[in-house]
Image (cartoon, rainbow, N blue to C red; front, side, top):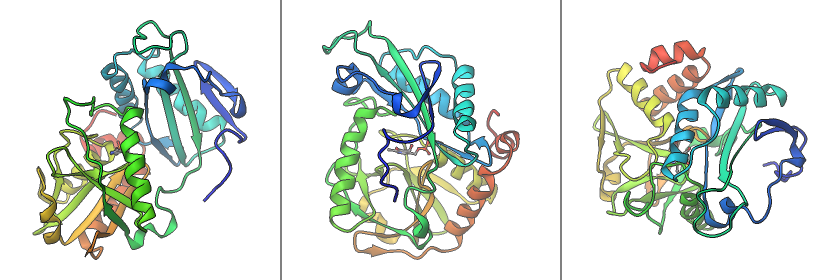
Length: 302
Ligand SMILES: Cc1ncc(COP(=O)(O)O)c(C=O)c1O
């Protein structure tokens, strides 16, 4: 794992419409986004020079800001173009992109409607969240923290503040020797991992929790479409934690995690079998197709 700090790297960051040297892309410590978590972000991956489902990520970024009560002052077209520019300016064809928008420092109180909204976009090489040997499967511990109800927090937004419990859950899982944490929702049903959605294979069908209080991931939706192309039944429903025992396979799906097999959840172990392998392969093929073909395969807009 690279230990080069994120504020001390070579490269370029798109910052409020300008390309700035990486080390100069700073903000003031009295920024509203830092103190009150008035910030939203995206995580995107480029494969072979194409940013996978770029427009869907950009639209989610804009929607996330609106859910937090602010309008990001750039059009979807301008943000897409900036993402592509950051990728090429940093000499990357495969890499991870991180757009982030936040309220500025004009006010530092809870009320901050007239603060300026900033947007920055960085890109760097980041192979997979779980590293090289992820294909062996990762181990999940059960989190103590639950995903909040949709009337407790803006759960459909990729809002920075929602990651506080994710970090707590992940740190606790790592301290117990797991790779990540599986979080339940406020009702006690299975929700998701700290940065990816979860799927189970049960009786030959693919089951996944309804995204009623967490992100309906772009990878999640892509995997569901790939499964349907293979005539696999896809079932979105409430999944009780006791049901994990009857799953034959489990995997995570997310931009950073891609499709990652799960080898264990607590004491329950799984083997990575046909369905996970097939969908993992389909996803790896999909992400490297030209955007128009991706859209055709998924039945989405290009
Ligand atoms: C908490 C959380 N859930 C789910 C996902 C999966 O979303 P996507 O597939 O759009 O990356 C992510 C990653 O972005 C995430 O951080």
